[in-house]
Image 1: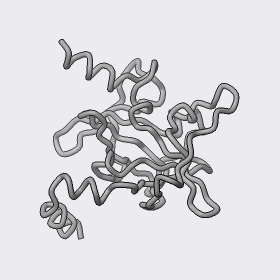
Image 2: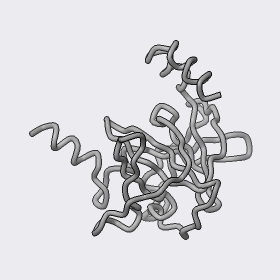
Image 3: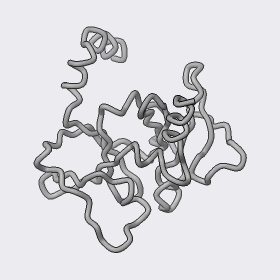
Amino acid sequence: MEEIMEGLLATVDEEELEDIRHGKYMTFQVGMDFFGIELKYVNEIIQMQPVTPIPEVEHFIKGLINLRGKIIPVIDVADRFGKESFVYNDRTCVIVIEVKGIEVGLIIENIAEVVSIDAENILPPPTVGHGSVQSKFIHGIGKMGDEVKLLLDPVKLLSDDALDFIDKQEAEEEE
């Protein structure tokens, strides 16, 4: 199956791939909430694997994984959002995303599905009070019938005061 997918993707150029991914979101569960991330950011989904811890980093940065010779930092999304941590099991996986040339793994409880959400069904995030930890990473609310999906902004997820993968990369490129 994987070989078939690789073969199909090999015949599709970048522009066609962008069209195929447009309006599609990888959805996943964190606690009782469902989130989505635009498919254009998703490189692959892998099974949970051994993580090498990094000393003196934020609690949600679980460490590094070696993905076919490439070292990738991984963050626990539930922990990042200040939710109760969960025990990693056989449904736990890592969504490897790429944002501005930086690859990062997102540890999640389980994948839900890939869904299409039209732009007219995406509402701006609510501005209630000071906002929760997770709401500052949301770029919109996707309506799907009676359900809603919280749509993540991966740039905000990876660049704030506590985690500056994006900002550090941009600063290194300017030097």
